[in-house]
Length: 315
Image 1 (cartoon, one colour):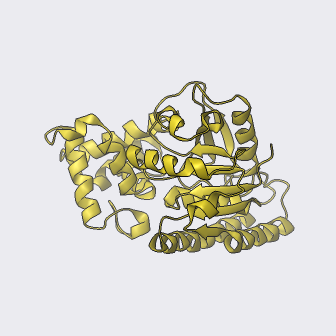
Image 2 (image 1 turned 180 degrees about the horizontal axis):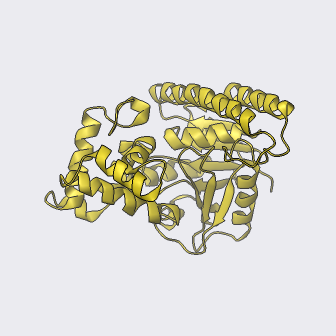
């Protein structure tokens, strides 16, 4: 089976990136948005990604003919690239931006699609309700994947109506730069579908990472989430401010960004849902409970991250 037509269910920070990257690589892409208001937010994200991708393409001019670091998701081989390559990439950005469709009808959004990627917020009940609604609308051959960052696909497989065609396909934020994609199956996933999604990942400029065993957070977030929680725990307990924690980490580890800069990219609501899913967050006196309260306050004040203009930092 060859994947050509893709729908992303949910146009949040990462869902919009998956959609734009897939369209940039030539796929027929539709995004499902829950409402007209959501549709506008999705379009705003595409407007911003359009600018970002053009800037990334322009940066490639300085690395043509070299092996210097660059956005691998935009162009893998710079050593054999030319000015014609750059022009084609600009054309691909234009086609992606103009070609993506945004649908508020779930039925219309998933009709005739080869692959549907669920990219809703990290809310278990929300995802279950979504799958119950989605299941009868899918074509028989449609592959269904989840981009959940911290939950197991097996929690949802029996609600999909196609557990044998259901698996996890997890992307990192800023996928044009951070381009691994983790593929994780359940006990009911047919063995041919990981291979099909591996090919899809390669075709959209990603590096497929095959996960041998189901685990919350895959490899990427099994490492990242404890790191981010440790940073937020230091802040919530008054050990140091966000800027100091980031500075210490960057200087010590020679890292380009710190935990709070990363959190602003990811988005505070996503971090909140991960924290909320932790049973320890129910205790307001625990570190996890303090982190939850801190994030709730930020969300109530509209400080949801880089996209909003303010999170742990102002932009």
